[in-house]
Length: 147
Image 1 (cartoon, rainbow, N blue to C red):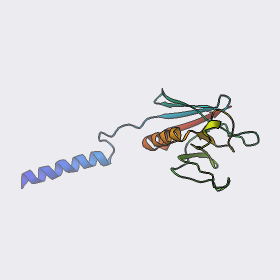
Image 2: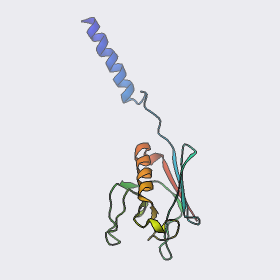
Image 3: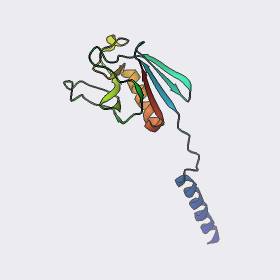
Image 4: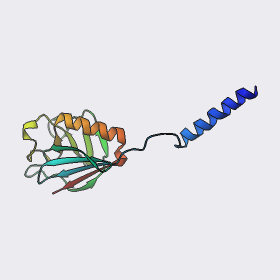
């Protein structure tokens, strides 16, 4: 009877550590997404180390992509634009008033201004970025867009 109580007490201590966040849970990585509109490139750093560098398409004439520092506000694995004729926006990461980073089928236009203001990526790159942010957390992600 005493041995049984000791086992339960030990499990209670382990449970208390896990619930309090004191267990061996891995720390989440710091993700920095930098988008340079002048070069039409996106670089991604994880904990300060360069991880990815991809071509993008930002807003064409008359459709500016906002500059500034943002954080993901919503993420949708499969989304269709209600504003632009149900255009597919796979792996959409919304960061500011309907603007998003997302995959595109117009991959031949990557590297030049072509969007209605969103940041377009190759669909495979959008899926990688989406999974990274989903795994590490939107709270740990900063999106910086410069001219």
